[in-house]
Length: 489
Picture (cartoon, one colour):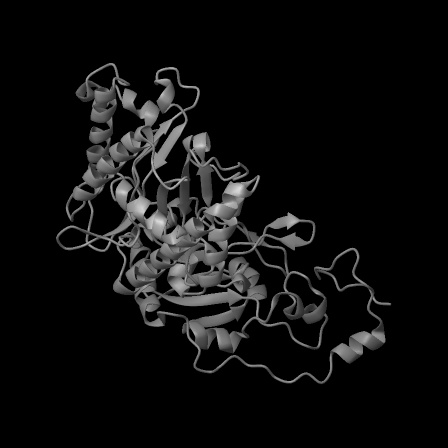
């Protein structure tokens, strides 16, 4: 029996392969080419995106990796998703993109030639295609060959094994995208990271520029984001219909998570982030993803969830729902305050407004409401001062973020373009103020403790304001109760 070839990803329990079987497996396979007219979705947009990046770094080599596989357990990897900057520049979204690298090679005084370094389809005259658990076609599916990948993307392609040769030759100034895993040439083991002589240490600037280039979405991107929102709305409807079953289950939160995630996987690539299904006091934990609690029909459910499309654009929506179908008076009081805060934030969205304006508008409503309740024992104006901020004990975080290929999109942008920047038409963002009234907070009256409420919607900045992309989901307490009653009828 033969041993696995060096570098082949096999399991300790894989059966040995005889020379006779190896020879037989290498013969009589029909060609299975990809359709000649297949292109990446929105393919006409990517050259312009690469040109904008090229203009920012004349004469420098730019390396944008898709990322690397990460082991989940033993010989099983986590499901792979390419880095969003790589997706934005190439349109390639599949799990087969692991380890691939887009190189923008200096060409002339100001331009670049894009080159994709990738692992092509396994040849049928070796063992990888049926023995390699990580890359073999019979284990994980077929990849395009070099010519097919070039037709798919319109980018010149090279074998991934040749990346090491490129990086070992004469080097122009080179930047590797910060925040991605080390580049490894499988054939030579040679690495190129920010610490490699082939790369500068300023690769954070490349990450910042790529984030900032993505701040304003084009029409096609907005359409993809709307599709993600529409599928998410359907997922929320699925959850409400499933509430009677979830209420009977000893881990009803997890039942809800599964119901939404089924819709996300059926309609898109999956969830844009780990679903938050937080009932009762769990809703006071901002990123509650354990989702292991039972459901109390007298409590609220905070559902924060979003579908990611096949093109990897994300929705991010939150609704806080009464598990029994109607809000109690105290729940309604808290819910209406958060809704008023969100409405004030949405009203502040327009081109030319500061990014922080909508958060400040929402927090003013929250602070005034807490002061009216007697929870804040100082005037709202005093609490809102930057050198005070006591209201933040009950709100904890900001009131929104950019949305796009990442659910927290453009996160590497510099402050003057994002947090301290101004809004422009085509930006897509969330508005999501919340109240998180901790169950052990003795500054609160007992009836308010353990209430967690967040309302989050997705909006695109227009020429004269903002469009509510998630307007198909009800926001007011009466509308939520009516919507739930209809779905549960």
